[in-house]
Image (cartoon, rainbow, N blue to C red):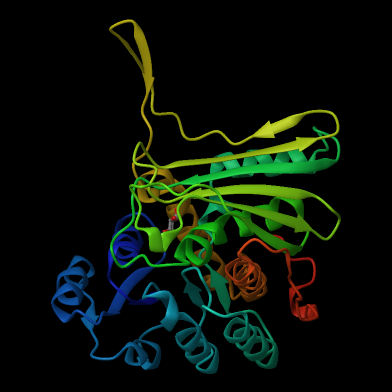
Length: 335
Ligand code: ISE
């Protein structure tokens, strides 16, 4: 399967490396980036053709499937182009920056008649999250009542502005909770907390967000993108008879000088390294079988609708009014 990769920044470069050396049955044959020098360097990893425009990757007759890893505000347009060309696409999150734009992708796919879009919610492929999901599915903790989520980044680049802690970071908690609980989120409230002096005031960092599901489960999600000490993602589901908590991949514990230290990943590439490989492998396998099975365009739309409500919240409870879910997405909670 020949893959075209649009966007060769941090995540795009890693996807090219993974598709080249870790994923079976796929190879990267075309790339594009607004920074041509970067595209040439990354393209050389795979011996790929470097295109002059993003859309040229989609239109390249030798490209069977596309990975979109360009900035978020370009995603919806490119995903629509892939659907119009009938090409399967793995689109990094968020699917779109507005719920209206995400819904257009859903509608285009419904018109096309079968799923072509997978959204890059890689946590669904993480071993720890899968254990939590299995414990819930097996009824091990009874009925879920509430969920505690923590999402802490060491720091963010200067390009990370304003509401991106909701649209780019919280969006993972939103998808993880929808998937774990098998329910839509119907309301979001951002609670004001004191801001870290180490973060730009524009960021309002950290943030505490309350999410409510359609059956009344409440999620409290802390997003702190300048936590400094490490990349720390936590999730604990509290049920009627027990709780289940996410384990991070083991890094070993070093006992030294009267203490015991457990290393943390310093960024998501390290923390979710295996999840990214498994996500790409599952995507490639599904595409080669002529199916699409991972997080769908509907999941991308629903998550964007929730983060949009969170952005609008500023202390007030905002309802999330979703469109009606098309039958194309019924029964989809994979992987
Ligand atoms: C980033 O874009 C990601 O997707 C990471 O998984 C997330 O942890 C980080 O907060 C985002 O900025």
